[in-house]
Image 1 (cartoon, rainbow, N blue to C red):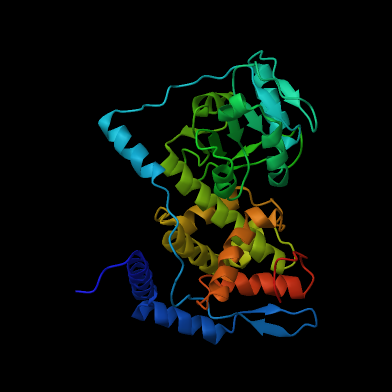
Image 2: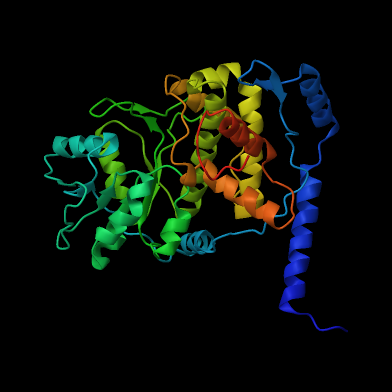
Length: 364
């Protein structure tokens, strides 16, 4: 019998994943009928000259990406079942807040309601190493690395990330596995404004959640402002984070290519279109990251969009949102594999070609 090498096992795993992905992605008879109806409708995007451009085939025939999964959520789940390593519950207390934008100002106001004297850190300010309590990072994603560099090593476990987007590569880069991460589902349109919680008929308990050392403290502070926030384990936080990533990537992209519509207009006027993109991105996450999002995804995301219907669409922080998906597109193309998210890729290229956004990473 021929020797089994690590390389042969890896190739077998890739082949098995490709075969399973292909089988699961095959359309049913119902799906074929729906696809035929879409083709008959000739769904298309308007070009700058008024002509119409057909979409690319929306169904990815196969996903040949390697899976990148984390064993931490699984370990956490078994620890929970066995009653081991239960996280100590934390409570709201005077905190450090980095950034005085919309979210930072909101957190500080909620703290004042509890008579806390938080320390506000602006760009370049030193971060005290001797103050106990959480450090809420309320900056843009592109500022995160400089913020982390400012934080004393002994205080990094107290960091609380409040950003949208895919933060896992950054946290892995700096070994920030014991920090806290929140996934926020509310609309806050201006500094000092009143936030609108993402409570919908699909999720009357709210969607916002947090996991990590200071999860209890953040949940308590948000509830001071009547915002729902559930304390969850890393597994559920990760699933929720990817769901928010799908929402923000799909709705912002579809809204942008249609002239900058609100999320409510996207949900109402381009529902089938955005739901196709939601399914495509969610399927990619399932096979690439081994994270299956909860059933009823499209209904849940559309209900949230109706709740915050006035929120404008815009392509921002590309590296952390749509750019994360596009990175896998380029990786697949480089290695001769099919694109796992062809609809997403075509929309990006359409927007780049027509000057709707100017991200240099997008190849046209």
